[in-house]
Length: 255
Ligand SMILES: [Zn+2]
Ligand SMILES: [Zn+2]
Image (cartoon, rainbow, N blue to C red; front, side, top):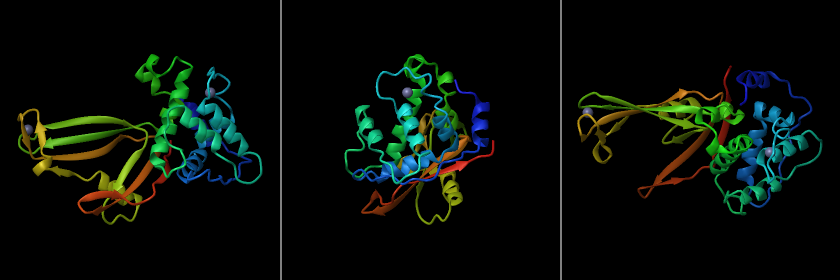
């Protein structure tokens, strides 16, 4: 659907005439503003929006997130003060997103909803997600930018049988426990082997029993643009409480 060569070209484009603009806080919308600012700094997406490559073929009769983002991106070309994300926020509620009702929300949830909605908008022209084969769904601009795969490997410590599972991801959530000083540290913690033992034993298909095992996660297919969500948790009263804001950083990989 979207050619990989075009994505490479978009990475190499020079964008002129865009200066950073602030966003109005539309009532506790700082979580959404942070995500929108990050998205607008995602070069291939920004170029796609500025070239209006979506709307020239869009046949949606209803409100469309990609068309709205094209409008939004073009306002960033105009000089001026802060802009308001209210049209995006109010319409997102109309398409089933429960975020944005004026209360404090989760930036990660908002990001996921935006990415899912952008992917759905890319598939609308082909009759929607249910009508499009999985292999074709993986060739949209959104999937080619953010899509990747995680591998989870579990080794039974009794019979040494290994099983592998793969999971498609659009971002990587790193839960930070203890002392982590850098993204590298967080990735090392994420990919460190974990022993499954005690209440958390593994049911080995070959042993037909719950056994001790070792589990390890790794990034099997690295997205072209890796979105890392850092979540810091604090243990209190045997309950894990999320105490930090979400940090979303875009890591650009050499193509
Ligand atoms: Zn559209
Ligand atoms: Zn086993």
